[in-house]
Length: 394
Image 1 (cartoon, rainbow, N blue to C red):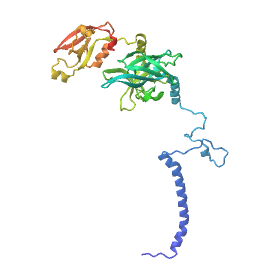
Image 2: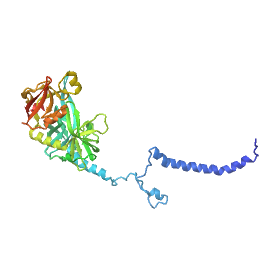
Image 3: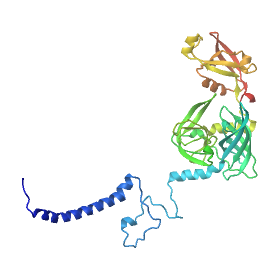
Image 4: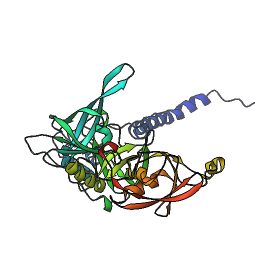
């Protein structure tokens, strides 16, 4: 064991004073750096800068401190500069938002305890200065009272002009002494996936709400209860309950779609009816109060697949089953019966109901079609002349 001399501790204390002082200085410097740079960066803390700029002549203000940081807030009253993308959205909103209205409805709902009022809310787009408004059918279906609120807060009574459940579109009308700001319907045929999409509407009753996204996809088909809506625009712009009937707008301020549906529990998957479809429907609804379509007059009873065909000996491994036929309908007059399986239209194979309905709707009133049906396991061909779809069947 080595013994130290009595004078050794005194020498170590003398040599330690400069080291201790240096350590204190280092702690101070490191603490300052951590408090001013590292912690704000990693703890999401940002320095607070005074709105009053430091005078360049002040000797206490070093050059680095005089330079305004990129995230400093502008002084009150100063001009706020926006990037081009923001300018596009801002200009579009200024242009289109006055044309988007809130629609509040009331309907009577039959329950086991009697009739009770039910309230609903949606959106609409003014399409003509004389008060015609385009919206969704499901927004106004069954409504006994329709109230339209303009962006300025003025409330007007609306009346239904016509509706089309198959396309989920409707037109309502309000009377106003002043000309109303009408939106411009664009050309949805020229849309491209990835382009800017701006949704304006009345989600959850919060009027004049704006969300942005892109055109995510085109020609989407979605299945609703007893209905398939086709050729829709899919968008990532947030659409919520109450947005229905509102506008989907492009960067030029043209309405490219009417917002109609969302996928519940999804993130940014909404759908809009293309403006070209909406324009054609709107013109017919205003002119006739309905959309004129060909009519066959059969009700859907299911689809046939190979498993069902084998299990029940149906005589065909594809087709759609006719559940019911209206006797006065074209199909009834042509001899189509309940239980028949429609396997082809004009020789083209039919596998599902959506394809069948699409093919019928795209025919002309007065056109004669050939239906191949299987009855009692045997095929037969029937000629059916399509007529106009009656109002009660819309």
